[in-house]
Length: 117
Image (cartoon, rainbow, N blue to C red; front, top):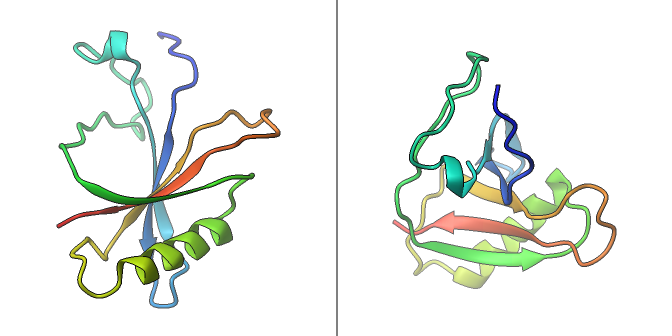
């Protein structure tokens, strides 16, 4: 019953298939605003869960435009190639992040994050 407004980034956890595309399962995460961090309101919808992300170190790449699944897959592949075989990171998932509201036409920011092991 508490309105919190839009937060950034909107983070999608992607679980890549063998060919690099997204598996059918994805998880969308929204950051709880700072004023609610210590005592977040309880969701009234059972499909909404509150999770605490642990501290993490990431490898990241940034790109612009209206990001689609194909863009995230493409930039994940570019990040993987840039890191080479020496970098240790989680291969079973990665984060796709968007920072802008849908009505912002220019200067959009998107990122792909790999979590360092």
